[in-house]
Each structure stands twice: as C-alpha cells, then as structure tokens.
Image 1 (cartoon, rainbow, N blue to C red):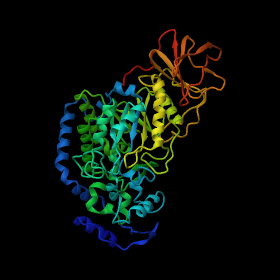
Image 2 (cartoon, rainbow, N blue to C red):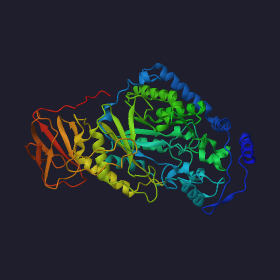
Image 3 (cartoon, rainbow, N blue to C red):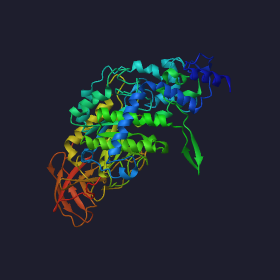
Image 4 (cartoon, rainbow, N blue to C red):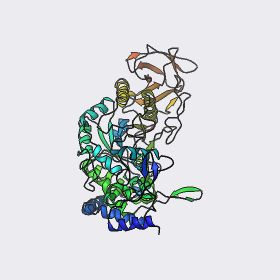
Amino acid sequence: MNTSFRLLSICMAAGLALPAVAASPTAGGQAVPPSVTPPDAMTIERQWVAANRPFDAARRQILDQVDARVEQGPFSPDWATLVHYRTPQWYRDAKFGIFIHWGVYSVPAFKGEWYPRWAYKRTGENSERYRYQVEHYGAMPEHGYKDLIPLFKAEHFDPDAWAALFSQAGARFVVPVAEHHDGFAMYNSRLSDWTAAKMGPHRDVIGELAKAIRAHGMKLGLSSHRAEHDWFYDNGRTFNSDVNDPRYAALYGPAHALTTYKADGKDVDGTYVSQAFLNDWLARTAEIVQDYHPDLLYFDWWVGQPSFRNALATAAAYFYDTGIDRKQPVVLDYKFDALPSGGATFNVERGDLADIRKQPWQAETSISPDSWGYAQDDTYKDPNTLLHLLIDVVSKNGDLLLNIGPRADGTIPDEAVHILQSLGEWLHSNGASIYGTRPWIHYGEGPTRVVPGTMHDTETQAYTSRDFRFTVGDGALFATEMAWPADGHAVLTSIPRDLEVSHVELLATGQTVAFHKTAQGWDLKLPARPEGLAAYVFKVRFSRPLSPAFPDQG
C-alpha cells in the first residue's frame, strides 16, 4: 500500500477530512494536488452510506409505501405487465414541450451541465474545466464544486414569468430537471440536505415551477438524472480533492470508478452499483412522484444498465399505479432499450427517426448544439431548424421536447427568448397542423431525409420546396412545405389517385389556394408568402374526410 493511499484510507475510515499534502507542479497558475490511489468500492460505499444515514427512516418509509402500492397493481414490477401501458391522449395531442436544465452548474456557465464531472479531470481531454475551476474558485482540495452552491442565488427567478414564456411559445408540457448528475436536488427533498430548498436559492424551485406551469394550463414533467450519480465524480477520487472528504459524501455520491470491460468484442459496463444506491435511487424517484405528482417522468440513459433493471421496473409500476390512483394518465420516458417497447415512451436524444413509429415517441434536443445548461458565449440554433425538426417529428408520430438553459440568476438568455417567441408565433397561426394531429399513410415527400438515431440532429441537410411533411386532423391533410418555392407553385406528388382534392387553404392566412391536377400530382398556385418562420402549411380537403393511418392505441 503506497503512502497516499494509506493516508486516504485512514482518514476516510475515521470520518476525517484529508490533511494537506504537498502539491505537484502548477496547472493554469494553480498547484496541482498529487495523485492518489482511489479507495476500494466497499470503503467508498461505507462512507456514502454513513453520510446518508440521517435519512434512513424517511427512505425506508418511502420504500415501504412503494412496495405496498405495487403489490396492489394493476402494474407490477415486471416487463410482462409494463407492456400493457397506453400513452395518454393528452400527450399524443400535446406535441411540443420545454425542457429546462438549471442548477449549480449554471454558476460557472462553462461548457455546459457536465461541468461538475470534468472540473475534477486534471489532464487530457476535458481538463479545461479543471483549470477553469481552480482559477476562478480556488485550489483543491480546499475548494471544489460544493463551493459554487452559495453562488447559485437565483435572485431573478420568476416561475410565473417562465411559465408565461413557455405558454407563449406554444408548449403544452414543461419538464424541469429535478436532479441532474451532480446530486444537487432542485426540490425540497426529505432524503438530502443538498437541495435548492436548503442551500443556494433556499427555494423549492420545482414546487414553485410546478404551481406556475399548471396555472398556465400546461402539464408538468420532471426529469431525474440521478442514476449516473453513482460514478459522476469519479475523477475526484484519483487525486487529493474534496470528493474524498467524508463531510461531502452525501453530495458527491459514491463516485465509484466508471468501468468497462470487453466481452465478445463489445464494451460492457462493469461499474459497481450497490443495493443501497439502488434503494436510494428508487426512494428519490418515488419521492418526486409523491410530492409533485408529475404528469411525465423522464429518466436519462443509465437506468438501462442491467444493475437497474429491477429498481427501474418497480419505479415504472409505482408511477403508473399512482397515476391511476389520481386519475392522472402519465408518461414515462426512456432511452435505448431501458424498458420494453410499448412499456413506456421511447425517447431519442438529439435525434430523430427515419419513418413513422406506430407507438408514440419523443425527440429531445437543445436550442444549443453544444450544451443543455447555460454556457457563456454559447451558440444557438436557427429557429427555422428547430421548427423543421418539430414538424418532421410530429409527422412521424412523435413529440418534441426542446431544452433551454437559464442563467444562474434565473434570467433566460435573449437568444432563447427569441427562439421560443418565434416558434410561438408560428404555432399561433399554424398550430392546427401540429396539436392533436396524427400521422398519415406516410410522413411526407421530397428529397431530404434525416440522419436517424441519437446525436444526429445537426446532420440533416437544408430542406427544399419539394419537401413536405404530412399530418391528419379535422378530416383533412395538413401538408407543410419546408421552403417557399421560387416560382410560386407547390406540387404534391404522393397523394393517392383515388383521392380528389376539393379545397386547399393556406393555414397561416386562411386564404384559398387555387389548384389543379397534373401528371406529376396536385399543383398549388400560391398566394403571397406569409411572414414568419420558413414552413408553410396547406390544409387540403378531399371529396371524403381523411382518417389517421394509425388509430390511437398507445
């Protein structure tokens, strides 16, 4: 056992803070603490369990309530019953929601919401956040991410103004992050002192937002990213940082080493996850369900690890069963293969699908191509690009969840406000083609195809005036042209021969559009181009009413 590891182990076992150690050469003008050998998983686990012991009784009470409820059904913690879930009509009709990444990581506002992880990465890729941390907030181990919490004051946070903006943007549901990977809860938790209600803003951010969101007629969603907290601060275990100080174990979490190994040529996760952590994760999930009654619950990707399978199934069953108790049809988002197809709502991060999915699904992206949380000097996407994504997703039976990142003081950047207002103006005139609609026999026509899958949402080429996306509503076809034709003619080429067009209207202005049939399809002679974002909806009626291709069936 080397000297650094022996010193670290003795201090942790005794519940003491680490003593000062001679620092090695500088990085960014600051002394770099020496490397240490991380303690073993059992030592880490004992320290973390001890730090959370004051909440044992509350956690046990919540877990007992979960067990008692899921025993009654109708959903139980197994995939065979979860596949009986059906997507509620409110979600199928909503189509557009707002995601909010806001927390302590908004204080440095440096390269996004993963700042707390990379603030402990001293060398190599992503180490610039470590240099930023020590230059602006002090050297480690005396200082660390915890010292940003008092700077998170949220002094201009106005939940009603936020909700009013989201409603103006045309959102039908709003999903603030309840807890991100950093372990700082934005709600008034019974299971932690590291919360916005007890530190930083000293406000129940989620409680205030929930009230405002519902007062403006929107549904409330909440996201939990706590599963990743098991390993999120593991870089801090490799040197003399405050992550290793037992006084802060309840914030920094187990911080087990993120570990993979090769099996059959593939990377397989081997990160240690204890039953104590799974119990705590389940209790915290149930806590936000009990206290805030979200209409939608979003989980990040790590719940798909095999170690979470039983806890995840229990959380899903509990959420569905309590929704039934409250007569509140709910939505649960998952990524990849974390839950069985049809057992919840499939979510694609920063991506899209190639075609219509019969089961409702969700795409999520951010107004920034680089970050989810607020970042200084960030770049922002063009509102037209985001509108085209919304239109394409809805044509394929999906909803779009669009993220913004407020500043630490609670103000929303002007660029984000402009994007939301622009989308809202378009939806005010053209929302009939989005809200409450269903897919047609095909999602659209034209040369442009998206690059499907996760993390590809910036790779789709610019749409042309030959690109249309279709939805069905009010017995009519909504054909949205993704660019205005230079010659003033739009041609719909994929309408079946047995459908005769009887009337066409430019939805934004209500103007009747002249049309005639040609060998290529239905030629529309367009009126003057309407103002606003570049997507133009034609409401097309036929000699008989249209029906959706896929009836509502969850």
